[in-house]
Length: 102
View 1 (tube, one colour):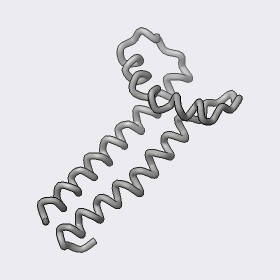
View 2 (cartoon, rainbow, N blue to C red; view 1 turned 90 degrees about the vertical axis):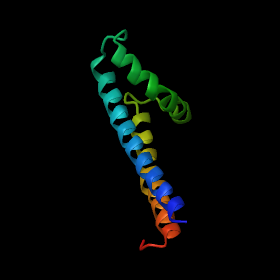
View 3 (tube, rainbow, N blue to C red; view 1 turned 180 degrees about the vertical axis):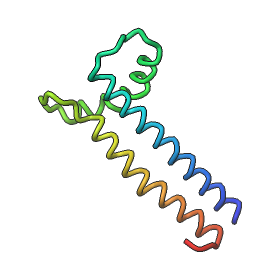
């Protein structure tokens, strides 16, 4: 069972890193929206392309008429929740399967 435990711990650590990198990309996208960059720049298109599929449903759900877009903040809070709840739960499950201390 220790192999499955190690696999789950490794999977949780990779998920944590991916969520951290994605949160930085969201922050960069929010800053880019303030400065109005060239929309044909490949880096800008990549950042918008990777963040908009998750930000768009949050914007539709909020439908607030505010001058500030709060969807990146909501998405960052969701990512923070996933890191604290899901990743930590997977790590604890992995240690329990290994039979080691939690």
